[in-house]
Length: 260
Image (cartoon, rainbow, N blue to C red):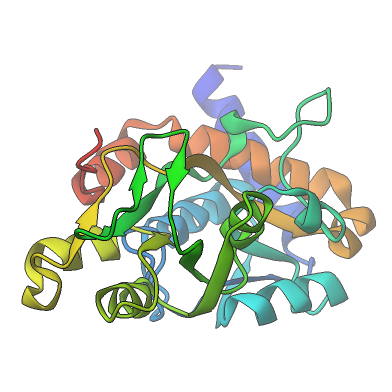
């Protein structure tokens, strides 16, 4: 049987097998994380999963949630998984990323890889060289519910985690609430370049604070019911990301970091 015909047959068989399966509910954060997810349900992560759904014959529901609620509902089983978090020990207690044989997260089946940026209040005396954080007041702004908060606390920093969106974090930094902010997504960098409120007050550090693989993290309650189903979805994520079509789409929307 020709390879193309075999591939089509496999896809059709999967679609038939999944026709009676309940749709899966995946939550994503209800604040802008361009270009990956947006509150209206757009973004590269959603486009990736739509292609995965076609490839596997699955049906996915995409639900915007505050991040802590997204985590809580994945823990309880209300949601089947979370779109776009990083892997960390706390999340492993109730969810799983795609794994390699040794139990470490599998970057080949991640949704994407990205930097987390560090911002400095100008002339504050704070600095970051990629390893050492000099921050005399030891106050850092970060967004609530993110692993970044735990990483900063492990460094002995007091974290102001009242910011929900990256813009909230920049506002706190510009107002002098702290001299350092570690913010997710690329919105903060775009605001820094385009918004006069931050001109001369806030600067992007030359080195990112961290680089992560971001995943479709599946709740353990859902995974344990049908491991093969979710392994197939993670495998399909890798296949879609390798296609020329998706790579062109990603390249057209991912704005390069100043670090790159």
